[in-house]
Every structure is written in C-alpha cells, then in structure tokens.
Length: 453
Image (tube, rainbow, N blue to C red; front, side, top):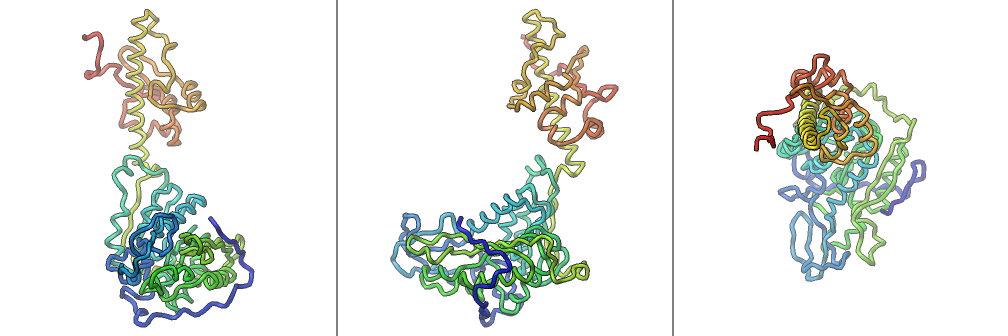
C-alpha cells in the first residue's frame, strides 16, 4: 500500500480552507445535522451509503458493467451508457479492512469508533482477542438502538469463551462533546466522519479528540475530492457532506492538528484510481496519527474527569476465561472429554494385552498420546504429556492424575495450576482420596464389550 509519512513538526502544506456549511444542515436532531455519526449517510433512507459501491466511467479491473450511475443523495440514476466498474472489494469494505489490519498489527486493548452508524465496524472488531473495551459513539440514537443487539454474544461465544474480558458500549452523543469515559483509549477511529461536521464543529473536533481524549492512535478517513471528477455528475458524494477536501487540504489540516497536539501522522488511502488516472490518488484518503511518546497535551486531564455527557444506549459483556464461572465451565468440559477418551483408550489397551498374553499391568503398549486423542501435538507438547504421571487402574476404577490432564494442550492453555484445578472441578467430578487424580469407572453400562458378542 502506498503511503507518505510526514512527521509532526513540518510546516503545513498550505493554509486550511474554511469548509462551507450546507444551508439547513446545522441544526441538531435531523438526518443532515452537523454531528451526524453515520459516515456517508446522506439522505439514503437506510443510511447505507457506507456500503455503496462507487462506479467510475473507466474500468479498473477489466470487467466492464453495462451502465454508470449517479450516487448523489443516495439515488442511483442512469446517466450515461459508458462501461463502468465497481470497486472490488467495495470501498466501505476496503476502509473497514484497513482498520482491521491496523488493529491486527498494533493490538489495541481499548478501541472507540466515533460516528459508528450501523455499528458494522464494531461487529468486525469485536472478534479480535486483544480488544477488551469496544465503544461506539453516534448522534443517531434510533440507529444505535436498532443495531445494538447485533453486538450481543452468540451462543458459540459461551461454549468457547474468549481468553480476555470484552465490554461493548454504544453511546448516544456528539463527537465534539467531552465525555471522560473515552479517556485512555489506545485507538479511536473516525471513518468518513469529519466531512459531516460544519466549520464550528470541525474546529472543536481536534480539541476534543486529540486534545481531551488524546488516545495513543487515531485513524481518520475522508473522501478525496480529486477523485470526484471520475464519478458521473458528482459534486459532493453525499447531501450531508459539508465539504470534501483534496489531498493538499486534508494533509494541511492533519499536519496542523498533529503539530499542536504532539502526534505524528502518516497518509495513505484505499480505493485505487483506474489506469491513466493515478494522479488523482486514492478515492478515500486516510490519516494515521500516533501520539509522540513523552509529550503532554495542552489540556489538564485531571480537571476533566467524570464528565458523563453521553447517554448509554447499549452495553454488553462477553464471557471470558477471566470469569471464574466460565473458566470452570470450560475446564470441567475439557476434563470430562479427556477422562472419557483416556478411559476408552485404557479399555483398548487392556484388550490388546489380554489378546497378546502381555502382562495386564504393563504400560509399554499405551501408545503415543496423539493417536488416542485424535489430535497432532508438537514435540514439546508430546514430551510434556509423556513426562507426566500416567493413568492407572485399581480394580474397576480408572484414575487420571491431575498433572496428566494439565499436560494436555487444551487444559494447559487455561493456565491453572494443580491446586486451582482441584478447587474448580471438585464439585463436578469424582476425585481420589488425596485429590491428586480424577476417578471414573473403567467400564460403563453403555460400553461396547467384545466379550459380550
């Protein structure tokens, strides 16, 4: 991916133009109000402009389509017979993938998406195991209420819980208001957001996001107006956009903000231009800001704590192995599975010893652990298992030492010691008198016995 890295401290490329607000779109509470959090929302009744696939008269992949469309105001109007092609993958997916790759690279624990809209980006990010707090902020309360349930844990996430806790919260409010619950985040994303702000709110935006919230990293995307002439009959890409910047204007603004609030910034984008139009740059331009270490912001955070101006619309917590009841659930389940497999294996070994006339007490034919459990272990895992105390029989009772169970990867990864394991499983399985092993009947009434046939 092409990018240009510009450290804060350089002179801005050119003075920032004051964006001209669109009349009638500055009042609070409407679809086109200045604090609109849904990027590329416009007047599309389903607010799916983020999902719209831009078309351009020039093919970028050699797979022509039959018509070209106008995307202004969310209306797809046939305007010319030229062959066109859509971005593949669609532009909104490219933006989301950029954020996903960024999260995968930097492993942030606390992430907030300002102008989260239909919460699709949050749904994509909640699967990342590094994230422990995921927050969305939007001015459209109805949209948050209608999409919050899509962030709830699925049944499978209770059966196989995360390693770390995850809390997901949706807040209703403006991105230019200060709320102390967003302090201390590792990453804040603003995907196709700033172009919805009028000049007053755009001036406040850096003070709140960079100065007050001051996260470690910020990702901001916005349309590149130099790309717009490639669209048929497009002036602004959405009726709610108050402005659209070219690359010089965006970089000038970003550098001024980075200089003031002690960030460095790198410029890149998504949405490659078609062949022959490379000079216009990416369709979506992106600024990646990273806070300079050891630099303090101009605001005193201690005076800004406990400002809760946002309304909580939705909140949920995900099951994780950090919660004792979930850890117990998973541990007991793994122990029961292991003991059952080892019990059946012990039966097989005893039958083979009986058929071959081998001493029934011999353990020489127990076999490799991966054969028994139907899994392939690494050399280190296999050595750990083989070096642990082996299962044994006393009469019709089958004993599996806890240390043996702890040696298997699915139990070993839970990072519990023998004492902790004993306390967690004590009420769910039978333990030996000294508590060092799980005890089970060697033969069960439902077992298939060869001697019965």
